Length: 237
Image (cartoon, rainbow, N blue to C red; front, side, top):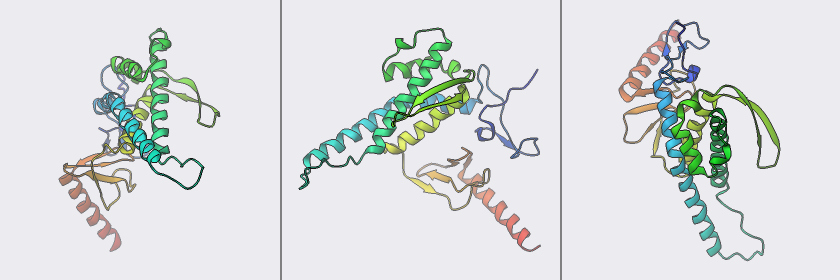
């Protein structure tokens, strides 16, 4: 029986490092039953989909508050003030667009009318109820229109769309101010070697926002000691 590995590839949350026949040495975990992703990545997608409506509401509150403050500020110029929350507006539009695209593909795969879900909550509900269909969607060609009206086409599949929602949820939480304070780690990630390591204040978990690797704080400290020892040996050669 052929083993199906997590479609997240080297970014798989449960990947193991070792003498594997992979490019970067990281072997993805096995995909869960009925999924293209490992159990932890599948859980991340479920949490992201469930949290997108809350993030969307948080962004809308920010936009309304900005509009209220702007209306109260008197300016000597007759020109309207430049909106200071264009990033929040762009993020709400991206959430609406991405969720619509995913829901339409899922409904199409189920042979149901995409017009049956016309609102963001209804489309999020479609994704929540049919998460297995989302992560296993076959590759298809998607055409989108940017804010400038330009038409763009590209090929996507279920794992790509699912992991993009995880990233969108993370970025949306940051834009809406829903994330906790984060401590940046001084050393590069021991997994991907990018300087994207950090720790949410109050937690005992260090993670990399680039490859999504994760360690306990004690585990991270042990890795830094090992890395420092290896670097010291290399310097004395």
